[in-house]
Length: 97
Image (cartoon, rainbow, N blue to C red; front, side, top):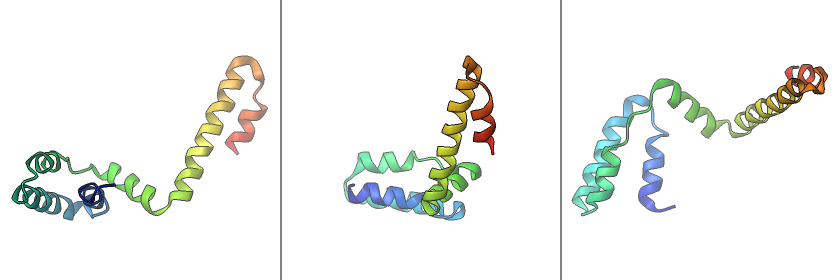
């Protein structure tokens, strides 16, 4: 990952209150360094909404738990598809528990 990409990623680690000022500072610095295209890219980054920010923080800090949640959702979806396809509802009940 390029240095600027890491800096962009770090923006999304910040609190919502810090995001805009840090984004603007990064864009300004990139423009001064002659990176006009990257500066415009950074300026165009939207501040995440509170729900998106919260999910992003969880995904960064609780990777194993988020993975477990996604895996459970996938398991439940597969069980529901089987039940709807005539495969019975036992697997669906087990996946819900």
